[in-house]
Amino acid sequence: MASLLWERLRDLWLFQRRSRSGEVEVTAGTIVYGAVVRAFLVVLGSLAVSGLVPDLWRHWWLVLLVLWGVVFYPAYRRWSAFTQEVRQLREELLCGSCRHFDETGQLCVLLDEHVRPDYIPCGGESWEPRNEWEE
Ligand code: SF4
Image (cartoon, rainbow, N blue to C red; front, side):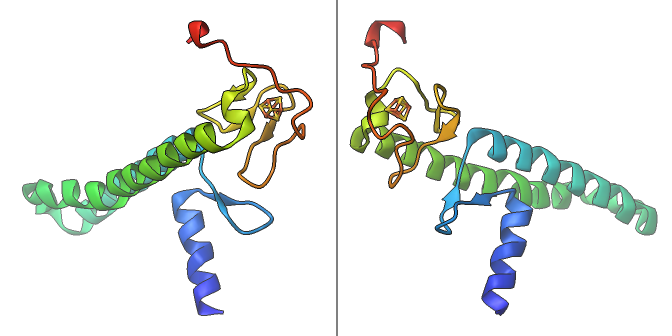
């Protein structure tokens, strides 16, 4: 129960969605959006705290440390996981070699559905080879 609550809070803070099977769906958009919202909240929190502690800005490095720990490091970790997942999809899945596959969103643009290791939206029927010269 406590771990489920913790997982929910973590998902909320990192702006991550989960598939029906419970796996985290990482997309470039959610990483950037999550980082921007967290940065906004940190700046807002810093402004609120500076009202209580007037010389907070003398310790500007503390704000930078919080920004790194709360905004940039989680975004970096998620971006690493995202690029690894995209690489894995490209190498292992049929969609990785299809011209309708959008890597940044892990999306089939033809059917507008997310591709997962256990789910190929068209079942392979609409696959078309990617033209390497287009990239
Ligand atoms: S058309 Fe089919 S093979 Fe191509 S990306 Fe979409 S689901 Fe994957």
